[in-house]
Image (tube, rainbow, N blue to C red; front, top):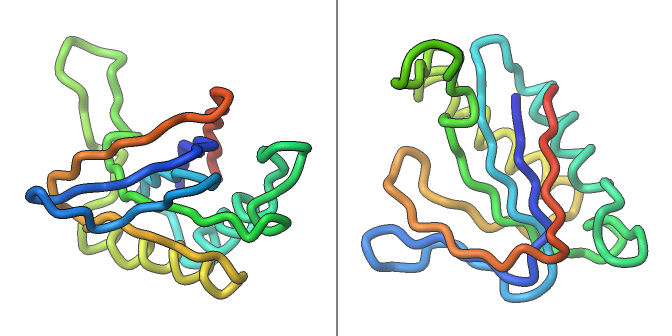
Length: 141
């Protein structure tokens, strides 16, 4: 599993002109990619790591601040661009594998106490954010 985590002062995701998920205050935007050998256990471990990561102001975590999280599935995080000009998506798990793991990740965050907003799996999404800092981290399981 791969996550791009951004500290944001606001973020939203829109599908077909409708806002489907938004956070209006300080929080985290998580772009989540799933690969073939990922498991619900890896999803839970990554959720716990992100929830307690001390990247908010004054070295506080989302757990410390009860900061909201906007989680968006993004298979393109597993693009392989080493050869040619067309990315290969072979490392990204297919939808029937990745969608339940994306949901497992979001559920794990919620079980830890996070307020989680979501994108719509598989939809074309417009993501808007204000990166605070900027702070952007890449985490791999």
